Length: 121
Image (cartoon, rainbow, N blue to C red; front, side, top):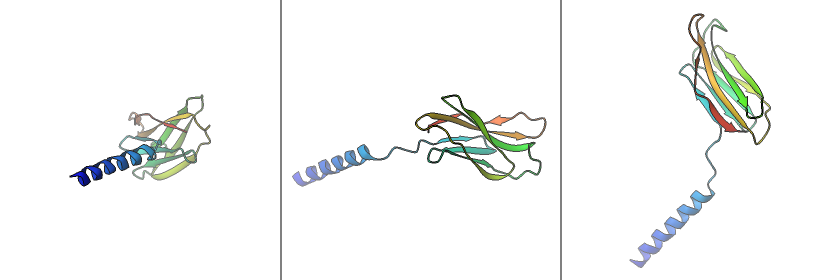
């Protein structure tokens, strides 16, 4: 009985140690709207934009990423008419960036945007 209790205490201590020093989950920002996605990778300040289908009319059918920082910079990454593109945004370190993906589908349809998501840079 004593050995079972000792093993349980050791297991609990090991688990607490592992959880206490584990690396945090990724702080990257991600937005999705059903037509495309945008992902900010803090390692390299890189935005990856994906438009899920190929459309032959750029600008009419396309996805793009909008972004802004907590220190006043704004921009966008796009227009992707199909596949994946990347934008290398050189933003200040130890600040915050907020991104979202938006898509246009046709001349008369409303632009559809995903939720804003924020990440530390």
